[in-house]
Length: 600
Image 1: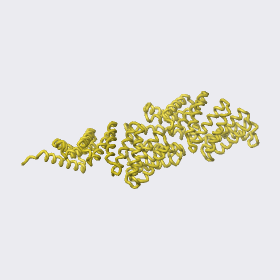
Image 2: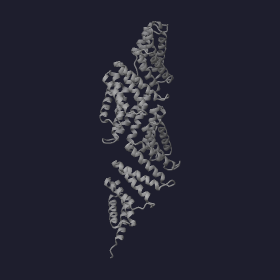
Image 3: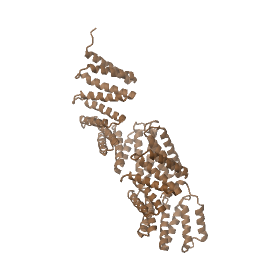
């Protein structure tokens, strides 16, 4: 029998290796892929450098190493796949029609290795490959849109790694180019819209331009409209849209955005797999929205569902899971929310301890330190209001100041942080009578108001806070400009609170206090009359169990008792006694209302 020539033997090894490779695709047997790798390597040892079968052998060997990596997870196989794809390209002529697809294989392999190891060099090399591929796929090429999408995703990933906004700008540019090549009806249009929307959302997070947020929402809405509920991307697109609507609610306070966010989060969870990798994050997002709605409406069902979602999310994040820390952070806030409902100091103390423990795990520079500082400051202020311990207030101010230092000029939460800090400083002024605290509080309230749109749901609270600080300064210094400014801001707040608004009675009460104070300083009967009118109107607007009703009854009774000139026949001595008795016997509603009233 004539022995096989080196070429026949190499061809036989190549065919045998290909057969093992094919059978592995059918049966997913690691022994087959191992045999295929061995025979391809043997064939390559026999093939001379310029042999036409050498390029195909290298390419198939690369694919085999990659398949075994997917099966067994051995990083050495991924390294070998990258090396073999480079070998394939090194012997592929520049004008070969296969060069672009071979470069794409290498780019995909490099990107995969970056995802596993995080070596930025692999991502840089993948970007270089995609740029070279783009030159080989000029305008009009069928695969140009896919290449644009791939390079955009790589730039987006590098932005997330290094934070260079220029990478994000390039990602947006390439995603726009890809979308322009995928008109309505194209199978990948929804993917391009979703990718573009995600990058625009990230640019909003970085730069704070509201038009990026609006366009991100629009892109995700369009992407979702192109996906059936059973589409593989439906859950992720619905989740992204919900997140951006939740962000916009935080800026403008439009309740419909919050309702839509909850609806889309639920849709995302219903469409996703039970153990989907993003399910834990989606559950946390839904819980945060439900807690926000609870704060708006006070429905305890929303709070109960929020806690349930947080707990289910934590079950999906065992120790070592990258999302476990953020899930624990969300659970940290639940005791404080329970306190708002129950008034239990035990809940409040538990919240403070959880936040303090979390802060130790989030040192300076940690991305989540900002949120933990805010949560801790809120709980500390609530505890100070209950126990009048100055140390709680001092710690709350330190937390607010550090959080504010981490909040750049265009940050969507800056207005809220400024208001919180101003509230703490005013409380400390009332304790220590240091005028500097009051001056800083007024400045922070003025900046917070300048950052809020007139239609924002918090507008009346911001105006009330600023006016209250100005009134306190008027009481201290007697400057008439402060009194006029306080009245103007209280009246602006009143105009933004139509009958039935939850803040209307508070604003009326504040106006009454304002004119009562002026009457005491100037012995002005006209101011006393206006104070009486505002307080009576405040009483008429208070819900029956509102905590402010006690103070309003007592204040009105004091006005009549201390100023006999107001005894115009509408109130007799017995009526004044009855007012004091109503104030004494009144039982306010939930701790949530008391907590809200004390924060304004």
